[in-house]
Length: 145
Image (tube, rainbow, N blue to C red; front, side):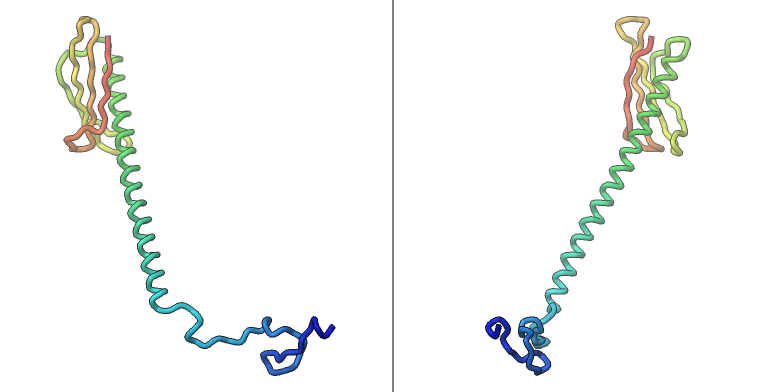
């Protein structure tokens, strides 16, 4: 039995049967904790990661806004095309435009009606612009007859 339990001095200086490894002796202040350089490097790494996440979130928000604009513009173009098709008479050839409010925004559309080899059918191209933009947000083509 003596071989299993060796008598050692514990942290408090008492003789007992508890092994010394259970009560570690405190180390000097220089060997424990993080250094200032290690903490600063960790903060730089965290700051760079947060900066990258913020930039990615901004890019995603802009992409979402652009997708929303193209979707609404596509619906406006489809509405103009459907209204043109539903008219009783064939639309006259040429260019026409108009303004509409849809989805809480103002849109400007341009419709170009062209003849086809069949005189009973017309080609209709509709472009939709957001506000006063010069580039089309959506373009839809179709036929009416």
